Structure formats: C-alpha cells, structure tokens
Image 1 (cartoon, chains in turn green, brown):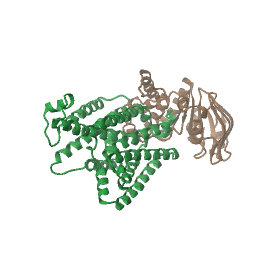
Image 2 (cartoon, chains in turn orange, yellow):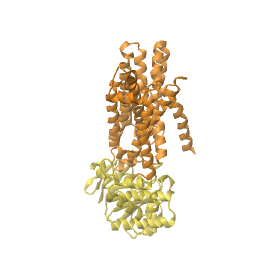
Image 3 (cartoon, chains in turn brown, orange):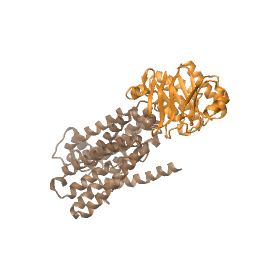
Image 4 (cartoon, one colour):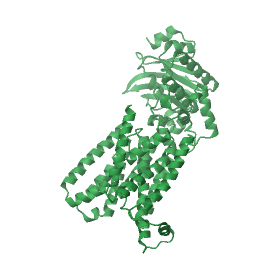
Amino acid sequence: MNLTKKQSVFLIISGILLPVLCLVHLFSGEINIGFQDFIDSFFNYNHENTNQLIIRELRLPRMLMAVITGAGLSLAGLLMQTLFNNPLAGPFVLGINSGSSLFVAFSIMTGIPFLSSDLGVISSALIGAFTFGILILFFSSLVRSNVSLLLLGLMLGSFTGAIVFILQSASSSEELKSFTIWAMGSLQNTELSQLPIITFLFILGLIGSILLVKPLNTLVIGEEDAILLGVNSKTIRLFIISITALLTGLITAFCGPIAFVGLAVPNLVRITFKTQNHFTLIFASVFIGGGFVLVCDILIQLLESNIHIPINALTSLVGAPFVVLIVLKRLA
Amino acid sequence: MITFNNVSIGFNKTPLISIDSLKLNKGELYILIGKNGSGKSSLLKSIIGSQPLLSGEIIIDSKNVHSYSRIELSKKISLVKSTFPKTDYLTVFDFVALGRSPYTKSLGRLRQKDNEIIHKSLEILNSVPLINKFTSELSDGERQLVAIAKAIAQDTSVILLDEPTAFLDYSNKSLLHHTLKRIAKKTNKCIVLSSHDLELSIDTACDFLATNNKTSELTFMKSPVSKDDLLGIAFN
C-alpha cells in the first residue's frame, strides 16, 4: 500500500489547503478585521476590543465547527461505505442521523422547558445518535449480510421520519420553528468553552479510525473474504459503528443534521485518489471534508447580506447533484 | 495434514458428502472432481471452517479447524473463491498485499520481506506485468491468476481453490494445474482444487477426490486414475 507520486501530491495540496481555508474563513464575514487584532485575539487578548471578541468568541468556534463537521462526517461516511461495501452508505442512510432528529423533535415538541433549552437539544441529539447506533449494532449482530443491515437502516430512517412528521403537525408554531431551525443546521451555536470537549471527542474518533486502517483495507474485498484473512468482523463492526455514532452524534448535537457531506466527500476522495488504502483515504477525507464545509460556510457569509442560506441547504445543493453523478457513473 | 473423521457435510441435516476417514498430505495436489451441486464448494468451505459440519471433525495439523482463532487459521489455510470482489481502485499489488495482512502489525505496514513475497507470488503466476493495474481492469482469466497469487502470498500450508480454471483458456488451464502441482511439491503445501473438467484433470496426473451425488460418498482415488474409473464414480 504505497502512495503514488500523484496521491502524495494530492494529499500534500489538500493538507496545505485546509489551514489556508481556515485562515480565509476567520477573515470572512461582514466586519473587516485587521491583522493586528487577529494576532492579538490569540496572543494578547483584550475582551473589550470588539474585533478581538468577534474573532475569539464567534469566528474561531464557527471555523473549528466547520472543520470538525466536514472532517467528522466525511470520516463517518468513509467508515460506513467501507463496512457496507456500498458507495451510497453513510450516517444518514444508516439512520444514525434520524435517531438524533427523532430525539430532538421529541424534546422540542413536548413543551418541557428544560428539554427545549440548548443543553436539552444537544443532549437529545447525542442520546439519539447513540441509541440508534446501538440499535444498528444490535441489528448487525442478527443479520449476516450488510445489504440487509443497510435496508434496516433505511427502514429506521423512514419510520422515524414519519414520527417526526406527526410530531411536527401536532406541535405549536413556536415549537415547529425551533425544530426547523435546528434541522436546517448551523455552525454558530457552539461556544468557545465547548470547543475543548468537542475537539477532544473528534480526535478520539480520528485516532480510532486510524487504528482500524488494517481491517478497513481488508474489508474492501468483502466481509467474507476479510474473515478468511483473520479479521474479526464482529468486533470491527462494533468499533466502526461506535466511532460513527460518536462522530455523527457529536456533530448533529451541535450543528444539526448536516446532509450529504458524509456521502459525497468519501466518494469524491476515492475517485480523485484512486486508492483503497485507508491511511490515505482517512487523511484525505479529513482534509477535503473540512475544506468543503469551510468553503460552503465562506460562501454563506459572502451571500449573507443578500440572502441567508442555511448550511444544510448549501451542502445538499452541492451534494445532491454529486450523488446523481456517482449513480449515473456506476450505471454506465 | 488434513484429517477427516466421520465427517458429514450438507444443509438442513441432509448429508451431501460423507467421509469416514481420509488423510490429505503436504506436498500433494488433490483434484476434487464431481458434478455441479455435488457439494464440492461445501466441502472446501467446511475445510476452512466457514460452513458448520453436520457431524464429525476436520483436523488441520493436529487441531480441530474450529478451535483455531481466525488469525491463526488465516496463517494455515487460504481459499481462492470462484468469484472475484468487485472493488474499484484496488491495484493488483494492494490486492495481493492483502494476503500478507495476517502477518503485518496493527497498522498494516508492509516490510521488505512482505514486498518480496508479493512479487514472488505474482512471478510464479507470470502476472508481474499486472502489478500496477486496477483489479477492475483485468480480464476474468487475469483475475483468477491474481487471486491465486494472493493465496500464495498468504503463505499457508493448505490452499483450497474453488474452480480456479473456470475462466482460463485451455493452455492456461493446463499450465495452472501443473504450476499448482509444482508449488505443492516444491513448497511442501497441501493443495486441493475443485474442477469438473475431466480430461484436463486426468492430464494433471495427481490423486483425486470424487464426489457422487447419488451415494453421497467421497471416493479417494490414487494416481494414476483412468478416465473410465473417474467417469464411473464421479459422473455415474
């Protein structure tokens, strides 16, 4: 599993592009901020200076969330696609996002004040993702074939979707509004003080994925053949689904259900890098996924004075045609 | 090497193949011959432990196949299936390298020795020129050779092959049988391949295991085997 020259060049370029986009992101937004204030906000912070406050309290969390959202969802999608040997798998298809949506819908629309608070919504999303992750894990111990499991995930998604619809039609306009806003997704709901734990959990998921490189590389030829090469597929399934639930739950909790990133980016990465070496694929997904959401969010900020586009709309707007392309290419 | 004791193989309690007692040795090539549906694939899957036996036991190197851990077993037996995985962007090198995965450390890094084994395995099957191609670009015949190279790279004392010559032309079929026979002798491996190609198999001049779907018995036939005997037992 050696890198070709082209792959190394791609990896280095995307690795350099990510921090560059992070900087561009920090400087974008309606208020122009000078270089001195930018440096001071990190090394010589004065909280009475509005510009420094904006960088540190608003833009830094938003930028980091964009990176973690893109990188984390792409990573989760990559793991799912390899586990299920299916380019159309992802945390969305498997119903892990639906778990979050269902729990959040419940917590917002029950009308109980604690549950509809920020903390309530965040914990509901996390609990939802893990509950559905565990449910999928339970299903995976019952069914042998990955296709059946994928089907079960889809069923889970439609079933919870129906419940969410019923909840929506029964809820007040105020509740409906706050659920809809959550469902649109936002990178702005995270506070500086929450960043360390979010970053820690993300890095945990990343390290976990790197430790799975060898079984992931083996799984590309199918679970049955991987077993014959000594892979303990049940344990690996458990690890993969846990990492996916952790990353998806974390991101959905803080940013809402962001669609398509987890599906589109890993496919894009495989097509451009033309490899099945997961060491390369993991880092490429992190760089390109993070970069993709940063670009989306920079675009959103550029257009903000004219039209407000929710992040979930923009990622889908770019992601959906891409999925269509993949399907058509597969058929051809 | 491989010992069968009162083995019964089949589905839903209906035995397809019964073997009272049989020993397969290192350094030999065995051809498993019989009609379609007579249980050849089931027998191979049972030897590698992925299909449960109805009764009896299969012993590999003095230990029951089911008491090996997966990783231990992957260093003992390899199986070349008749189907090839449909995976995009997987190079022949990376595919054959998977055969080394039972031996590599946790991150799967290949050492110099692994690289040498991968090249040598491809060399044995005259497939070195394919090394940088994607497996999705290969012809059916090339895929079969590469799949066998992966099994050789896995460096197991037993290699099982399910219809490995199905997509090869006649000269390559014959060449493959003789190559496998040579590998068995030279590297002291026990190789079992299934086939329903009678003429070709007889030319190979090796021991036969004949399935019969009427009697459900597996008959061991020592070389040299005549065509008529084989026809009578395996094809009624």
